Length: 474
Image (cartoon, rainbow, N blue to C red):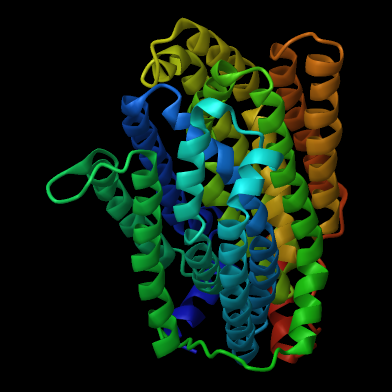
């Protein structure tokens, strides 16, 4: 194992908590901010085609994300395993877990890409129930973007491996490059520039797939050839013990993600039942909301890395110190972000449309939902604790109740069954975050998530390190 990763481990298990959180969290935060900025630009380009064109990606992405649930489950499980192996100084086990992860992700990515491509008509017609005004564009978009699923799975494995070791900078560089390529290709392929024909909405899909393919293949080759001490190998025969561990840790996450994404499919169907105006307003409102919670996606991954390595090293008290400080940062940051978006919401919405009905509906959504973002930050922190510790069941159960009991169940009863209108669906979405945030914090404080999920290793140096670090943080 490279000396770089030994230094990463020492800083994660012994360095200042706040400075280490910032060191690990800022690169993913930059990635998310760049991605959110690109999504805004992408939506602006699509809105130049028509107001309703920007609703096309939102139709299919819940289904695409549904396939990501299995990949996310394996990624979360191996973030816990690899980081805890590094914390316990079992570097060969960390490399073996990463190799198994790559093998599985390649197989799953290919299967899901093929499945989505050949089932696209059924998905758009029978599952999402896409409005007829954007049906043809959605079919064309899905046919292209389905092939990006394979490269997304490969990038899951690439980023999870390096982040678990403590390197959040390299995946960020690759993600930023991918987003930059995507942003350059977007107007060229959407409107047609030079020798390139105008492809409309399908051009946005092709830009996404090409950008993801270039950077993901480059990143995978880097690890297959060996990068700073870690080298990936593909296995013809799966390690059964690794598979059992991954499924045990990842299954609750998969269940939550399935509930999460399928709830978005159902939610999209409910929104679509109110017509194309509501569907477009929903898409625009979510763009504005995503700006306010961008901070989550950086620091929550940093929490998982620090929790995993410190638990692996036997430093449970330090792991809790990490979580409490991170919770304070994320709550404060999301409060600030939510207030800024709330104040600027109408101006942001008017970037994408000038239709009064769409503006008013999107404004209602942002007003109600954005104030619940700090609670979503609390819940997301509990999910990150589960990801790093490997104890994924409690936060997953909280998440399922959040989505299906409050967001979908209550939202459907109020807006459709009682006929009170879409405003009550927006309210249910907001209340679901409040519940999950409070429940997540309760689990963080009272739960026994600081027990390792890897094999115990009772060596003298580890006992000494635990005693030393516990004394430091008393």
